[in-house]
View (tube, rainbow, N blue to C red):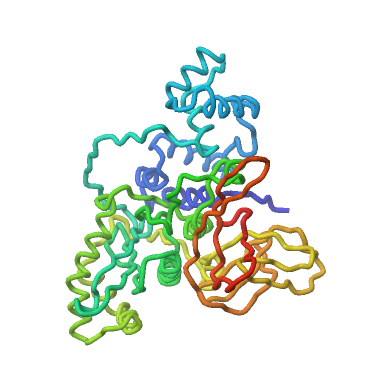
Length: 427
């Protein structure tokens, strides 16, 4: 019987890059840059791959508790002191007081992590002086893709503005996907990812701004997020994680200059081409975009340092299943799922799902599906695909009042009466 090796998407991506380095397609130095590790660490990984095979890339500490991890009692004591006796102390000052006055020997970084996990922000945000330098292109196509949206009067000053969503390959400058939408949001980003996946594949990393559809821009933590120690991602962030795509958030427009320059060029050339053809609607513009992108790539793209593509292939059906809105919910005792005012009745099955946690997905065509442990167990007809609404809800209990972030399903809210929300673990 063959041995089964369980690897994360990050480890699979490293395996692919290192195999190409062994075959002479890439240099080990370029692989180190793509994996975001030092050249010395890349040599260690290559040595482990040669000696042990793919299992050598699996982290040896997986599933083990850190030897120096502080206990739950000490963590609660640190949080209690930070909110009470030492309220208003910065992280460094608090660490000093814990060591000198309370006899709690922890590092500043440990204090910072404990407080951030409980939603206690820093006293002040320090911004160091900005220094920008030109970043060279990545060596292979698909190593990095930059994506963004550009609101502009694309059909002339006399018509209302709309938004052009686009993604450009960093190594070649090829616009790998683009579409016109009314406004930048989660659904347009998912559609952009779907178009890119179908035409080119899955890139190793994407570079984007800090739009609220891509990254959490709030500092509030729900009770479950505090327990788990991390904030739930946005819909698009979860999809990027499911696809194994590294998400890099730029802190300034200059950091993603490739896509910014593409939009500047499009606001010149594309606007003129649309006016020349008399195109004034989003639908007609989207029909014209493929030919324009092909012509633009032919004229302005550059050859990559390495001709081997790093786009991971994916079937259209896989992309359709993975690139979708996702909500975590619990199946009721009546085998029904209540989500955002909807009731989804699961079909009869030999395997009971009552009380099980499932993922309810709304796909880009508006249809719904229910998944349990990566297995689709039900499908439902399409409803209107709308931008998910983010809302803060106050919950009172045990004399503790906190605000819990919830996401309303992509369905119009009922006109009156009680509306049910998927609170636990929603994305």
